Figure 1 (spheres, rainbow, N blue to C red):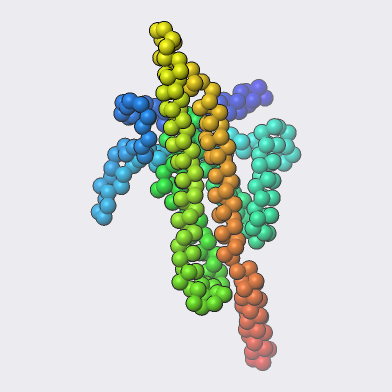
Figure 2: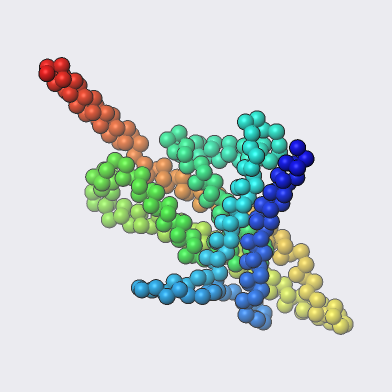
Length: 309
């Protein structure tokens, strides 16, 4: 029994290391590849290398690499949280997992209805990926949510889901929806369809990036103000940025923690709203009833033919 307990503890330690290691690798990559700079510098994601492609070369950027590292960390976290689950919860870890599952399932049910109950894992994945991507900036990493290409990829995936559920009533039903409520609004409805992933991507990307930029500008401004106010002090005291102590940390709590988690929640809510709102539930149920009635009619005709023969 003791050996089994030790083995389980060792697995926990390995999973915890696997959760931390990706961020350590990201920090190491940034330290080794970041060019020296003086003063404030606000740039996009660095390009590590480029893969030659037939049509257009594929650049591998800092945002893409950090996204993969966040995914690996989330995968290890899921393994750690779900290892050793039992029918009756007897550990704080399982209680935490069950609480998260219940909250996400309740959120999906309240926002999307019973038909979309299976969306709970997808919504939980969106929240976790977005939140941890934004929170990676606390470690000095470039947050993937500050790269429009990354967030646009998520928005395109959501747009594909929206379109898939709109096609549940067939292509004609989808085209009919573009002409509602009146036909002359069709061009506006088409523009609205295209604008959905664009607005989702820019909203998420813009809010996260603006927070990073504002925090960097305030930190640089406090450094200059500190030099003006305390520059008269002798020696190293005059060069020490007193005003940078505490204030940037408070701003980081808002821009990196609160705003990052808030944007993850908003992106998930928009996903649920657009997917469930674009699904024509009543028309879909009517179509199912017609198909079932047609199938029953065919079965009855087939039975009658068998009885006659």
